[in-house]
Image (cartoon, rainbow, N blue to C red; front, side, top):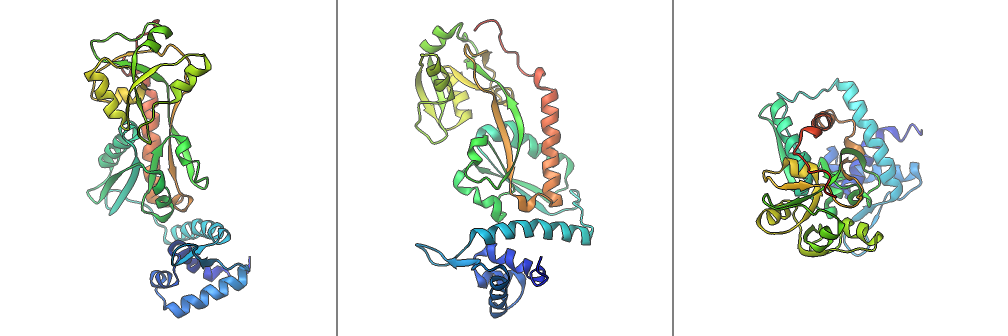
Length: 313
């Protein structure tokens, strides 16, 4: 590595994250002319413009190479800072807000239990904020506005730089109202009215419909909702069938009649995602450790959940 680059790395990280010479200078604590001089030095050392004029809007945008180098530098600087300072995270004395993004499904299954675990181990200075999942906000993981996102693996495909860990792998079950009867076979299942959760809103086709199509079958989706918890309430109030993750129904306050689906479905998977910039951060690592412990506990207790009717498919 060029020795001239090392002292410039904090400025490079600030320039990439702020995408503004003025804001980067303020963040590092130097004048704007000095930051402009550092940008010029970085460009000369790295043979890359690093920041270029944004297309279609005012301001600057970091080049791909600048982002790649800043990502690597950020982790190294974090590790170095922790090593030099001997920094550890003390949840009892810390002042920290953990921001977690999840839809109602992931929030019910994982986020709320995680919040309870955090509250049970941390002092009053550690608080949690839950945000509604929005794929348009995944960039907030890099910017530090969101610490952790919980969702389906496919929801993070557009940001391959994120670090992802599977926290729940579960099976789907059929749910009907408490006094109702679960479908006895595939014909009965297809002839019933179903409620489907559409993440984008208004959709009437999901993974169940794809599995049915592979067998030359179809079902009638009578109701499309955007909320998993609303789907549960709809089933409790009407003669509808929902095919949902067992872990969600186990965590729900509603008691529904559950049965095995009369067709093979891929497992339900829930993952946690975060940006590499915080992978070595002691407070973030502490939060992820709580999630890992929670997942292990839920795995051990999975067979103690609600009874699922068998032999009815």
